[in-house]
Image (cartoon, rainbow, N blue to C red; front, side, top):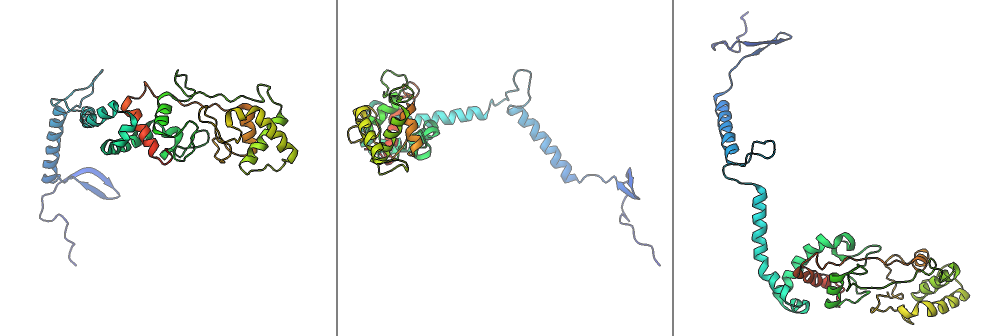
Length: 293
């Protein structure tokens, strides 16, 4: 019976590393030359890269690199070039009134494209994406407006805000009928029942006597702002109470709370925070969402 041939027969003995486990020895084979040469090349490249580009950290800063390149500088340059490309449009928008911006097809397209981004950055946090609104923040995509939905109305609201503290802000103040002692709770509830009935909603516990009392109380306390037919008044920001579009909710408890405690939300004034072109672009974009008049 012949002995099995050794795997390394005919080759120089590479020796071992001295490690052995369960009779298995670890041979000390040299690394392949192609691997070593590749490794040496990567080391050389890394040294060159560390010299050309920012690399070694220091106590207060880092080695800036011979080329002085940073991605931050590249981004800044890209932004500068983008701003320079937009400047020709933004300068024209700044110098025109918002109606003229909308009438110019080129500026209108630019305003819609830019306004979408600006809205996402500044407005969507409250009014949601696409201006659909949420509880306490009105939808900008329907045709219900507290202060008017024309381009000029929208621009003014964006520019000066609502109850923002700006001298030219939209101002309205609904009384806190219960909290300020103007009406007792039973009268507040009667007014709420009447308001709900105006839009075809009827509370389960409402009756004719309550509705009649609510109607009389509404005429005495609410009609001055909301109108005799309760269809609202844009001059004072009083909402339409007949259309069943509710900012805070249209269930009885919510309506009672609105009458009892009032709401008086605040929209910030964007003048001074945003430049003229940005405000006009936002006005054009909001107007285009579907509810602009």
